[in-house]
Length: 203
Image (cartoon, rainbow, N blue to C red):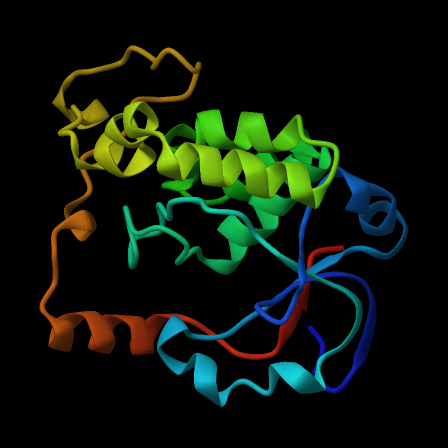
């Protein structure tokens, strides 16, 4: 764990990045690691991002959250989802899945974003990833099959007797009540209670 003013030579997932994380960043991640800014989505304005001393600030492409607080919401990933997504995109799929396996909802993130993560991981650089992202978002056929809609479908829980695995080889998704729409008061209260501060080094 590093203070905001500490230097970090690896890739840092940060909104001040100008390039999207991609396979091009794999050598940097291997040599110097990967980090994420650990803060609450409700308090982004309080984080001094400009003070971050990092050599490779990077953005993440469009993905859907599966964490209990922001289930089904695009771009509001938890720290572990962000780290895992970046690792998978860079080519460290096994390590990314290992991180998610520590959480009971981790397989949901992989399932919701399976097609996008696969497409992103095939891209050679950030420009290609942005093109894939924009194509996905602008395509009517893709939108109708987007991860958000997948998240909205009811799923049988393993507790209900379903012991079969999904087509992607992952356990079946359990029904998650957190994706129901919250009132603004409940949303801000829940977000402010969950999420974090500083920089967490993944290696």
